[in-house]
Image (cartoon, rainbow, N blue to C red; front, top):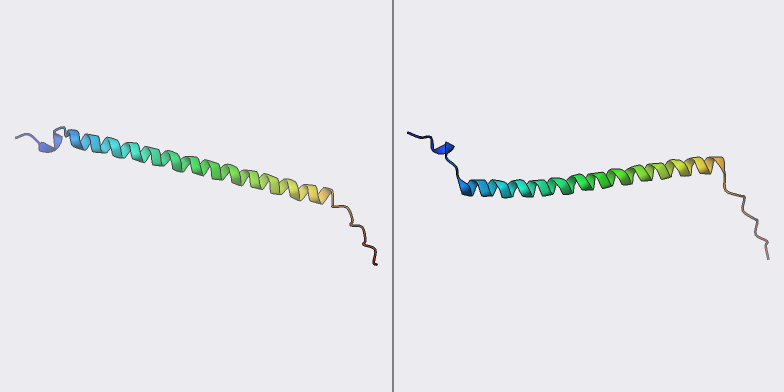
Length: 69
């Protein structure tokens, strides 16, 4: 007697192909979003470090005193 599980099933094959395509698309969107967030975090960190050192090396000029009326 032949094993029925070894038989090809075209409906199962189509279903698995569709599921694989959907999973691949979702994985692509998730990895793209993760890359965008990592790039944004790196940019924010670089800007914060630059601002810190710029402010430390070049303090803002003293404000002029207002004349009282």
